[in-house]
Image (cartoon, rainbow, N blue to C red; front, side, top):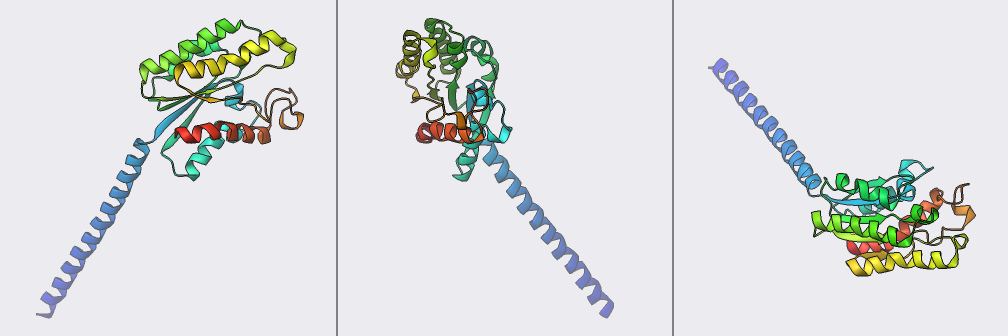
Length: 223
């Protein structure tokens, strides 16, 4: 009789243990499912630009798109930043690679191109045409994507007429296409030797923080 009772207790213990394991496994599975679902719901923000976006001369963690991601994470917003910055990129180069980048779903498109065009003295009309082509491609593929345009300016050495015409490209494109405009990406950084690397063009890590602030001032409302 005692032996039967002991066997019954052992069987019951095994059943309870099995149930406990099943419960733990279920909880782990549910947690994993929630995590996967959350990751799946993340919306993509594509930063499409030049070395300024790529973070030339900086550690990848110091580039302004990465700093934007950190801000997004701190606010627990459901967005993932994709840095598609490329050193030396012109508007013509961007025109050639935009379709490849649009193979991934884009919810917010931040366009930062034109600076290298200006430094090379490329005609403003050509830069405008290329940027409009890129904008049209995004609209065509993702009509519901929100769009942001980073404004750029040229140094006086490029000539008064050219610098004025170049500066006007960005507000005009933003107005025409219903885009949110960052008036001047390098605001408070451009021309400040302390915030730029030795080449006088690319921001230091501290300068990149200010770029991130300039972008966030407009991007926050979009998100």
